Image (cartoon, rainbow, N blue to C red; front, top):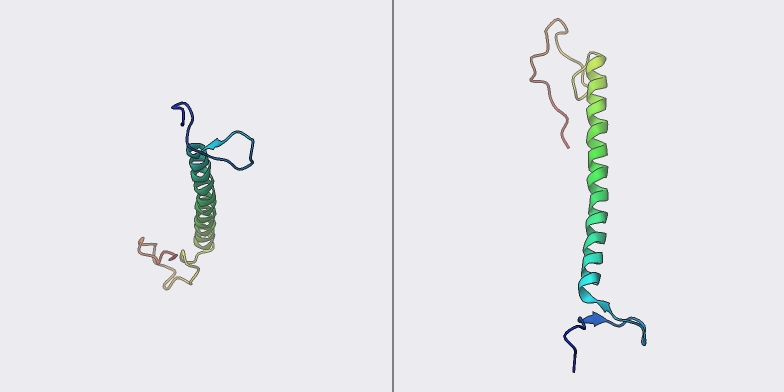
Length: 85
């Protein structure tokens, strides 16, 4: 008979205390979210790098994508080609 105070758990090593299934689920969920956040930070780093490259191109008198501007006497109208991902 199972006591109400005992949680359903997994017995990894015979004779040792069982690890409740909810703790295993929570740890697994945190691990998965942690691994996914790595991809988020990598993507954010790439976005910041591309933004810096675009600012560098504009500083050198080019469009955001690095191509040469046509008609250098015209002011930027804001319709420049933005980098695509």
